[in-house]
Length: 269
Image 1 (cartoon, rainbow, N blue to C red):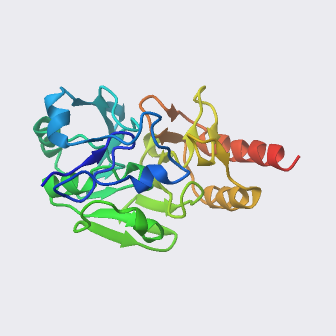
Image 2 (tube, helix red, strand yellow; image 1 turned 90 degrees about the vertical axis):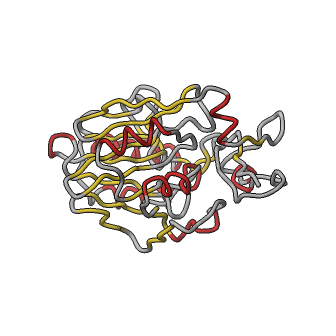
């Protein structure tokens, strides 16, 4: 029995004696099938191929973890360290003993919280390594492809994970797409960790909102107006998005709101 992993999106599937027939995550029009066809790997194969994780501080109390060479979608996981316990925001596929030691040296994990299904990746092995729950929004439960024993589905619009850290359902990309509001971030001005629910653009000075990023399918104006109304209720200076280096430093809330206004202006012109 092997635990097969989709090479294109990094999603881990239930253990089986043979490779899955397809990857429903990639077949959905928010993702894509690789032009060379569906390909599978395993965590053991990735270790044999020399993959490893690196980590560095993003801002005090927040580290990023990235896999090199790039694998799957290439997102970063983020280790948020608080007095009430550490939270892993989003997840990456690759996990090894060095990564486990690095996190344990910083106090382990109280919880894993994931923004949306494209970053569910290999959450089961991460949760098993740290004996912690994984919080996913119930609106996206159909996309849980691997073992779900660690999953805690949350509902509604917010989930306080620990004091001062709240998961907020924003929708858009997926019905349950969320960001994580960290009240103590940016030196107390607040920060949000967004995955690609809010996508930080090339200049690190705007954000975008899409139904599908790889297929360039926009969101409708009515959804953008709802998203804007949610963002208006939270205070934040910094925005940390899905990929290494994709952060906005300071004035994040006004940048996010003005980006939404520009998006609406074009859609409705």
